[in-house]
Length: 64
Image (cartoon, one colour):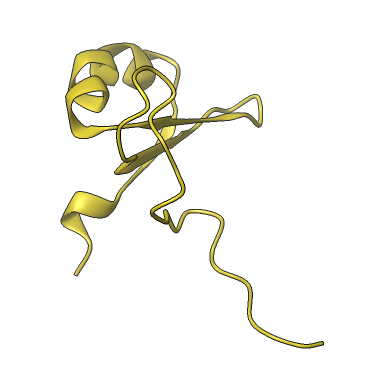
C-alpha cells in the first residue's frame, strides 16, 4: 500500500490538547525531540515558557 503521510506538524481532529483534551491547534516541538499539543488557550498560557525552551511552534490557526 502506498500513500503520502501527513506532515508531522499537521494536526487532525484526533489531536487533543495535552492540558485539557480540547482540539489541538498548536504543536510545540521541543529541542529535546518531544512535542506538546495545545488548544489556543493553553498555547497562549504557556507561550513564554515555550519560547524560553526554544520550542518550534506550529500554529494551525495561522495556516493559509
